Image (cartoon, rainbow, N blue to C red):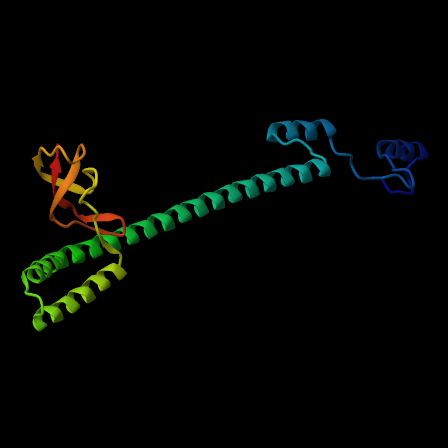
Length: 200
């Protein structure tokens, strides 16, 4: 059947089957709101306001800053403790080494004193040795070596080594009455204890 031979009634029926959009109407389909809500629930995401997101980011940055600050302070404290410990160890190593050297020199000092004690007065050689002895003792004093006071002092086991005890009514209780071998300190550290005789 040609278009010319179509009846007006047939043309009306065909037009009724096809909906013609009104002029100016929006032809885009609206999204299914229920389906979108279901997708949001399934994905576990909730829509957040921009202000909430900024607040959350700010809180995370604050936590990171606090964590890094705490870590930095701990590292600084550990380094300070390490530095102090290292300095203390170096100082103790120096003292130990110096004490060993002084300990080796002390027998030489003892021999000087014995030799000078037995020398005759007016002996030129003995006078020369006396000058060398004074020079040696001055050098030891400069590096911190000092003799321990013992004679007439109250016995102190930290500085004195008692090898003999005697009864002496004239001496005080627990008093050093004779020094058998001189003791020495190196910067308040005992290099050698004084060998003494103690009364009462």
